[in-house]
Length: 125
Image 1 (tube, rainbow, N blue to C red):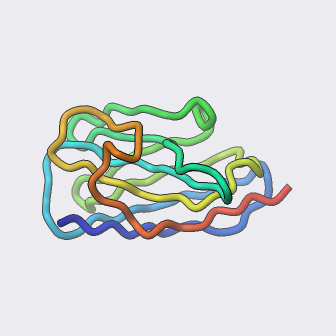
Image 2 (cartoon, one colour):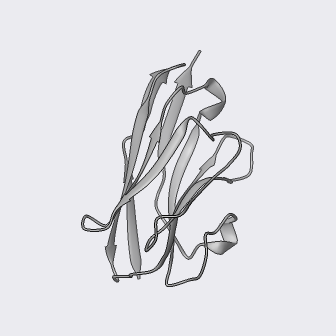
Image 3 (cartoon, rainbow, N blue to C red):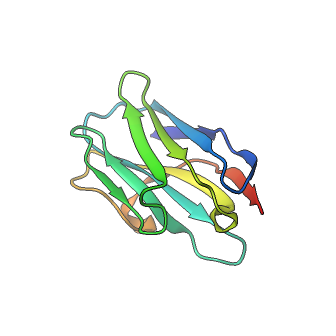
């Protein structure tokens, strides 16, 4: 089992920045990927970004490309997403997810085995 705990959410004005963290514990893994998803009220959970655990390859949703940066610290077993130039439409609950020991980056909810509890991000206009 892998446990994921997100932190760093909050309220920010449009144009501002936030950094979310996701700390993994439990079973260790040396490959696979971790990702961020978000879910706004009344909408489906959508992919935001993913990073390969071993080679660091990246993938972003078009809606956040150029504004969000995903990174990982393998020693701390933590994944981050730096969110800049935030917009009101970025308001959502942000979830961290993991797909340990699986090939490739995942882009859909079903690609991931483990999920965090979510952290709220609210961007005011």
